[in-house]
Image (tube, rainbow, N blue to C red; front, side):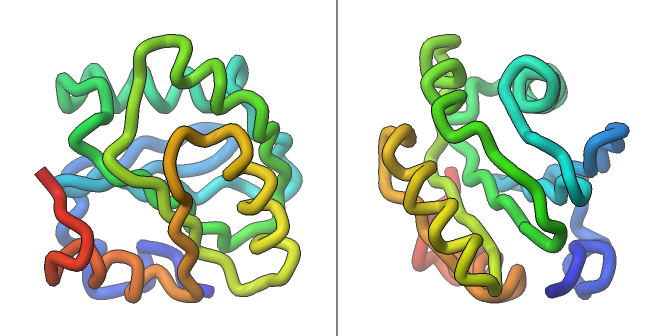
Length: 140
């Protein structure tokens, strides 16, 4: 799997947010996260910080954004923490997971139990972004 830094679209990043637990890339209409190996990704230590930083930078509640989780590393997600995201009045236009592993597919199915909408899955970051760019999935 490829990192955003390894594809041609890296030059379109508006802002790169670097954290001890991973990196988030802000584009026009969508955001891509790459979380570090071994992290147990949860609302209080990770997601809340990301969401607040993106909201501050873009001035949005997220309802006009697609969030792409580019799972280039193996890490755990506390799926039930999606409830905290929505409880704090945040929203998303869409949620994509990019993963090549069967474990990633299983994890996304568990996350889907707590996410308010359907999670779309892709095998490559380029395919996920192309779906947005060519209008298969609208952005703002």
